[in-house]
Length: 221
Image (cartoon, rainbow, N blue to C red; front, top):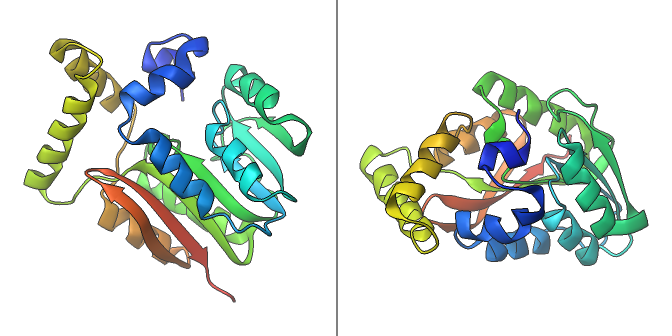
């Protein structure tokens, strides 16, 4: 995984402002994701923490919780640390290999599409299920396009339309082309099937075009 700044082609200081020009309904998705965290949660793990935008909302939602943020980009974690203070601790590392501590909730915001293979993602979901307490949940905010080719093309066009509000058509197309070299957007139906194979019950809490907020509850075994 590259650093966020090199992947997106922006300076780290720009991230929180620029991400909203890249991702439609960004704020709304974070609100939906954080609102799914139980208020009584005590331990939260954030995969691919970034600057901590989702993590900070989760801590406000669950006032007694502590959070462990995992991210390979040390620069991003330094921003997250300033944002969240003493209720959060951080691990610099790839969440595919970093041990996941026992927790009530695992969250991820635009992080899981960096997992390059479905084998690796399936293994991650199995590790996540093992780390969660019975009844715990994984909440993921990400891009999950349609399995249908025509629908997926319409969704891509909608994403381009959002980008063109801030960038030229050439720049907008260039962003999607550059990101596709590293990002893997698994279709929603396939993503649900992977989570279910790992023992989760999946709900789609919010969806618009190719973007969605998923809640996957670990079964009580």
